[in-house]
Length: 287
Image (cartoon, helix red, strand yellow):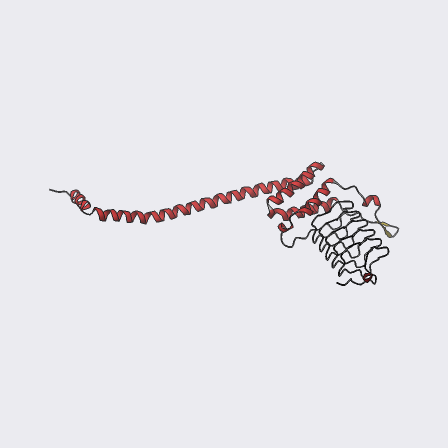
């Protein structure tokens, strides 16, 4: 007498094709969810690894910046210079960190090179001595302003304002640097080299610019109002829309300068070279 197992076996043999199709369908139904699950797990693993890598990179970035910022306060000149160039390289490698790096280097310059303060003598102010103004340029400060001038400005955060106000950069070389929109208000910039620099919309109000060199600089819409520019060289400088209101421009050289819409109202122009006749009545030069 046949057992239940035998009947089942005979049924499977008689319906082998249908059974095979059923198993294939069941397998297909399981494979889809399985593959989807595997893809989900893989994506989670990739995301987790990416977060880990970003956290590691962020940690390394913080360590590099912290070490470099500490180096700016080092006692040895090579430590400070090395920190400055480390920050420059880091800003190139990680542009999102450029904002705090730029502001830190600007603060470094302001703290280490403040403008000399006039002395109160007999109820009046006495201008700083030449020795206080013409201090030999320091290697670390020169490195800092060079790095600031050659940075990639496109990587600056929106509305970044670079301030080098009230500093003493007399005798420093800022040539060919990009200082667009930078404030040098009240700074001592005697014999400073701005040749070829980009200082569009720069603020030089109340600055001391005696013997400074702006040869071939781009200074459109810059403000030199109330600045002392005795014997300053503006030869071949683009000063379109610049303002020299009540500036002292005695013996300044404007040979070949572009002066469209420049405003010389109230300026002292005795001995100034190559300023068109239209400016001698202290009115803005027309287009």
